[in-house]
Image 1: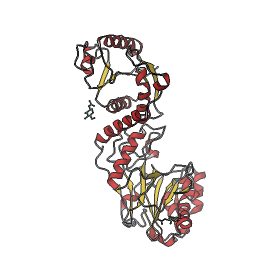
Image 2: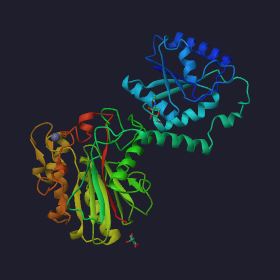
Image 3: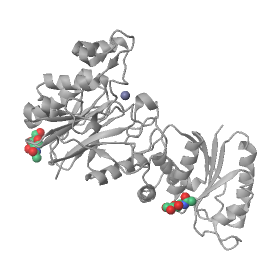
Image 4: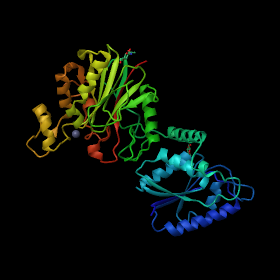
Length: 432
Ligand SMILES: *[C@@H]1O[C@H](CO)[C@@H](O)[C@H](O)[C@H]1NC(C)=O
Ligand SMILES: *[C@@H]1O[C@H](CO)[C@@H](O)[C@H](O)[C@H]1NC(C)=O
Ligand SMILES: [Zn+2]
């Protein structure tokens, strides 16, 4: 049984006959769902679309004249459908509802599905029911047409969503991007924090930069956050690639065939931003100012042990002829040795690497320091100690080694926030 029922009459041409049928529908929905559903809602537009025989000036006025409000329906109206649906999403999330029935006309079903695909994720379950309002007129299209939208319609929907999301204020303050003094101006780089984005769900708020089927932030919201980052940092959001997390050591050398999953990227193309996501796992950035090449890597505990950092260094050396002594590496914020524990079996591998990477090794869940392990592996691989930044040994910009779990105001953390966690990122590009 749906937890929420949305009745979509957005943009409908209303007349007395339709008004009458709508009233019947509201009554039926109320009868069927009032006891179980936690949210009943009518979605409508602002436009003056009433026809001559309708005694109301607008959809909204017509709706307000129905006994809908007394029946517990909330009316959400805006001239932008994106605004209406996003407002609905906020209400659903506030009430923590994810099983949703949408009643819409046959004509609008395909459009509605596009909106939902952009503004929701697989966390939400939708079912559709026809709203029996598509009377007469010349609305009867071929069924194939009804199931699809034209490219123009698709573009209009995307523009509606983009324009609306762009109009939203950033939450929790301005975007703050942390940078390292080690990386010269040849590059644009940084590590993102939580502030300044539009994500409103507490664990994703506000600068979440990753959308997955398991989390509540849709692609469109993450894309808007990315655009705000690109604007603040000075890169083109269309020329942007991020790692496809595998918790292993695969590296995509840009220009070569892109693997399905990889935790490192390298490039020597200027103006193309590359990024590593993280939310406890450590984003790493690499730069060689001499050969003008750069890289990123995502290093969680598995990737750290599998040597993703040195795999990225090796790609820089092999592909662009970089010299080890020219390569600069910055470790971004990650879960610190204060908070990160592993079962003793897994911690053992870190202890073997160097006993200094593990604290309370004799306990069932020793504390593990992935930052120290990464530095050790990079130094063993030939990176100069002074060319590695982002731990207490080297750090001039102390923010870089703050623990993500200990700083909920600044960083997202999977360890702390659970399944619906947000992601920050480290990014770099060669300035054009
Ligand atoms: C409708 O959307 C506009 C922006 O498109 C916004 O300014 C306005 O506050 C919205 N109204 C409601 C009721 O959401
Ligand atoms: C980038 O690297 C490739 C080798 O992978 C090389 O052929 C190319 O000339 C380089 N481009 C620039 C702009 O340095
Ligand atoms: Zn901590």
